[in-house]
Structures are given as structure tokens and as C-alpha cells.
Image 1 (tube, rainbow, N blue to C red):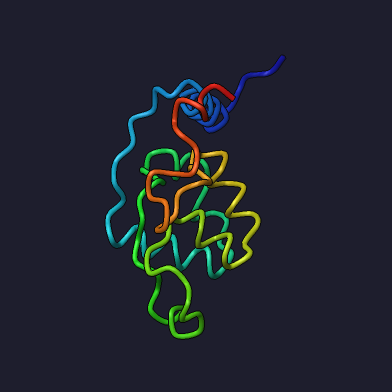
Image 2: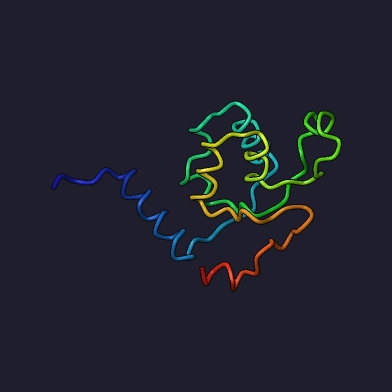
Length: 123
């Protein structure tokens, strides 16, 4: 077999760290959150690759963009990146966020998630 490219090696290491739970994540800055919301809106796949998302804590609630609240008055005021991508029907972004380890059960109504973490790990 040929040699593996450095990017592929890095991506393989990130995927392994996500699956094993040994990844150290940090809270995204407000600028990063705004850039990710914008990338989701514009379907910019390169801005939210799995390696980029793996370094961020994806399970935090962020304020919903104000322009969207005026069109959806009954919507939640805070949303995760995964919830926003699903709301905007950006299926590619949803896939990347799920692969990067975003919890699909978090919302403003249930901030700790619908499934207990022990039950979720047991599945």
C-alpha cells in the first residue's frame, strides 16, 4: 500500500479520539459561533469540517440569530449548532456535526438532553 497523506492521518486520529471520548474540547468563541451559523446558512462545507468541529464543545446553547426569530416567533431563543442546522435543513452540516460528536437530544426545553448520559453510552 502507498503512504498515507498527513491530512488523512490527522483525520483518522480525530475520528478515533471522538469515538474513544479522549478528545479535549474547548468552548467556541462568539466569532467562531457567528462564523459557523453563517457557514450553515451559506452551505459552506469547508468551514465546518469534522476536524474543525471536533476541537469545539458542540453541546452548548447559543442565542438564535435575531433575523430568524422574527420569522419564527414560537421558536426557542437558544439553540445548539446541530439544532440550527436541522432547523435550516442543512443535511450536510447535520451529518458533520453528528459525526463530530454533537448530542442530538439537547435543546432549550431540555438542556441536559432527553436521554441520560449513562443510557446513551450504553446504546
